[in-house]
Image (cartoon, rainbow, N blue to C red; front, side, top):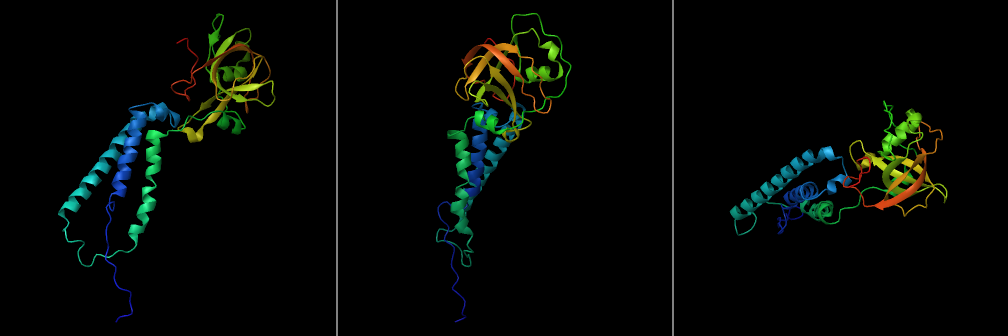
Length: 259
């Protein structure tokens, strides 16, 4: 006797060797599902990243399928009488159950995609996103001017005279205000993805607030209060409010349309 424990021969299970390729294939399929078959990816990243996500999805799917094919070939060529002498289980197989848990995020992309960020994120973001100064032209002489939220905020900070005497129409989602009589109309601005979202907000007076996360078009006028450039939150006196469905791209701050 040598005093050493006996060598334990590896006994590969049915799923042994399949974890990595299956995971790659599932993640690739999830990416393609959210970018090619739907617009779900717009809840997470900017629209311009779609080509890169599609390319990544095809690459991961191809790698996963190649890995599965290689594993099938290995098993076909493997002797039917079990593992060769000397094959030892060094404990690596015990990590397999944990590795399979990584399939949960991939399956989530396909079946339980979470909604876009909304009032919870906007309420927790204390400071509103800053607006860079731009050259703002005079508004047309029209009964109502549709306007992106960022433009409305930027004009209130850098060109307030252009807003005076004009009725504007804005689109955003609702979040609660500091008092029962006020609430906020918001959009979230992305630099790259939802993780870096910053809040654009306008404080609304004059109409009762809908439920949080309701998308709404509001029509009214800027109240003329001074707006701080470091935390720009202009106030708006609203005459009419119309609940609407969420836009296709919730993070693209565009003027409301009649369509």
